[in-house]
Length: 194
Image (tube, rainbow, N blue to C red; front, side, top):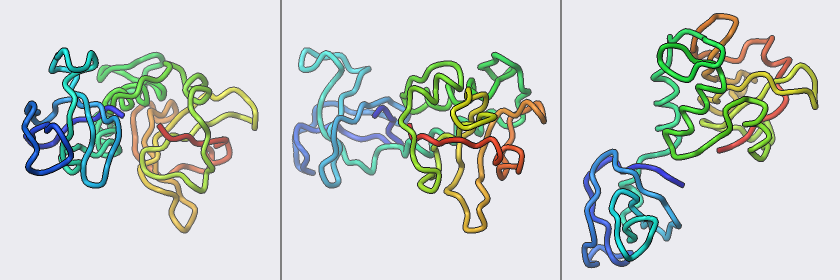
């Protein structure tokens, strides 16, 4: 998983507070998490080239220094709120549903296909009852039909059955955050986790 750090921290040689410092990372700097071990994350730092690892400088850092990837995903998606819906768009000048998901996923280091139906095909489906914040909803006119819309869940489904989400909506012609409307519920066919 690719993420960033939210505070300056040292990458150290082993998962221990008194371990030798290897390199320092700063807020917003990208790290790739290879594994976690208790309160420690084994990472590589792509921007810090080294002969030690072709992927970037390797080492350990406190896991609490990492930015929560779901928060980053939602923050990026919310940065597009109010942007006009434009079919094929991927920028703040205009964006469509799969373009919004594409840009939000990029913010957490996940590369996805461009179109909603390809995004659905690239990810493993999860049970709709297991959806949590940051998961994706996919919509089609019939079960097994071609996916035509995608949205990002902003929370788990509520006890009343409502499903909060953010999406680039072709009906309102903009990026909005709302509870899934009845028309969308009728077309909801699956969900997936990045």
